Image (cartoon, rainbow, N blue to C red):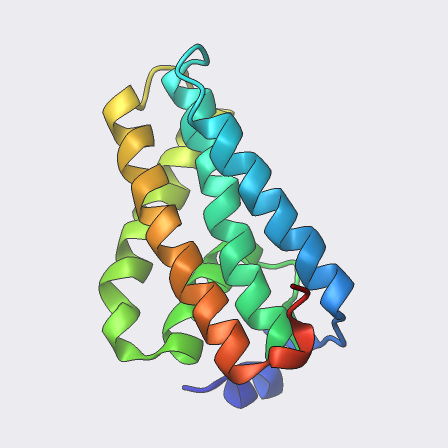
Length: 148
């Protein structure tokens, strides 16, 4: 599958982004990483904040490619797009983030205590690596969207 296939299936729609919109998303990621590192917060809350940063990084990739997901299965598809944009070597990362998506849904909607500080720390470390990859990809593939 490709993003064009997704578009033809109605899973994503065209989206015209700007350097300012991308900068705003990067700022959200930076804020969320900083907030998620606050160990005074509950592990659930730290994990949820970190998950939001991961989702925003995937959103940056989609926006830069000229798309945004439709509402149905939005988080799932935003994460799945990682492989379509960065390549099949990211399949393990997609699996990890999808597991995080499920865990985040549990802690958000079902019950508290489904994560630990170790879970949050692991996700934060993952996000920092992904952030570096996304920013490098952005500079190489869409330099017009990068505000220095």
